[in-house]
Every structure is written in C-alpha cells, then in structure tokens.
Length: 283
Image (cartoon, rainbow, N blue to C red):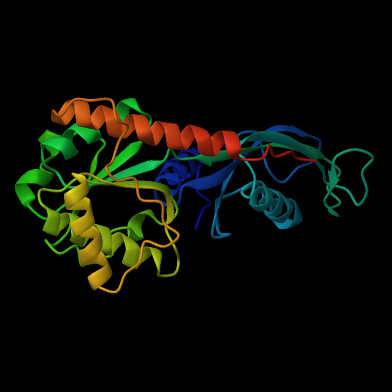
C-alpha cells in the first residue's frame, strides 16, 4: 500500500483536530543532498502518539515524530527544525543516518477552537449556537426532541447530538479531546437537572472531559431545585465551578439577549484562563 499523499494528510489533520483537539502537522520545507523525503511531504502526529503520512521513514521520521509529541505538550504555534542525515552534526539534529543530506521540517501545532455544547435546542439554545459562531467557538447541541435538532435552526457547522429526555447517554464522549464549554438551557427544570447530572457523572469517569465552563440557566429558586435533584442522585458539585444563573448580568430577557450574556461570560472565562496560563518556551 502506498503512503498517504499530502492532501490525504491534510484531510486527516482536519478530522483529527476536530475530534481530539490538537495534533502536530510536520512538513518538509527544505531538503539538500541525499534525503529519503522530499519538500512538501507531510506527517500528522496525533495526541495518542499515532502518526499518519510519510516523511521518508527510518530514524529521521521517528525523530521528527518524537519532537512533534513533545510539542503537543506546549502551546500552539510552529517551529522549524533542521535534521542532518549523518552520525554527527555541528548544528541541528543528527539522526544517526548515513545519507549525508539535510532536511528542515516545519512542526506546526494545530489546535481546534473550544467547543460549546448546548444542552437544549429551544429558542435560547438556538440563539446561543448563533452567538457561539461569532465568539469563536465550535458548537454542538444536545436535544431529545428531533424537531429541535433540525439543521435549519442552527449555523451550518453546528453538530446535533441526539439524547434521551433523561440524558442517560455519555454525550461528552465524542469530545473528550476538546476544551469544553457547557451551557444547560433546556426546556424545564427536569431536563436541566438530567443534563447537569449527566455532565457531573461523566466528569467523574475516566478519561475525564476537559471542562472549562459549566453554566445553568434559570432563576435562583429553580437552580436550587436543580441542585437538590442532582444531590438526590448522589452526585456532587464539589470542585466544579457552576455558573448559575448563567451569563453576565447585562439585563434583558429575550433569547438573543440571554445568549449574548452567556457568550460574554464564556469569553471572559476563556480570556482569564489564557492570561493565567504560564508562558511556554521551547529550546
């Protein structure tokens, strides 16, 4: 079987990043002398350690893949590394090979935007999905009623997620690699409690979702009732920051106004997390 071509690697990169959140795209950008790979050849290195594509194989490709896995632990961005296909090198990375050539490889960390999962496809959920696109989020909508999962109600890239009324499914499972923002805005307190309980249940399991934000819509009286129901099911909010009532207190009570307040709070949380993240450096 022939190695995947550059276009196939790019297509796989898009799929992987959408599902797993991060990957490193490695591309040969310069080659001199005798080399196993050519300019333009690509290799995708995934977060689980697997790879897809071809840089020429051998010790050189294995070294690039190792460097890519190390970059996955850092911030997004790119770095160009030089590899000498010799036993020794004055500059750059010696590979132990004897071809005698040199290659430069661009290692680019690809990171998906955060994903907003909306529990509830009613008017507020629809407005939140619209606002999510403007706020730089990918979006998915979990809803038990088929008519409220129809594609015409949401932006084109929104992913519908079918659930039962009691949210018994592990609906976070397809997004475990993503940075998750969850907004519980369903039609009644019972479905809100079911959705919140399901999120907490999945947070207690392994692998644990990367939850950055969890918000619940409703009055304080309704929120208290939802909390009691969740606790009755033996679940706890200890260690989980619940934004309830959801959104910043900007006033307004239409679906659009509520959606703006919710997205404003999520953007605020995202910005604070980015500001608090220590600066990463590479050797």
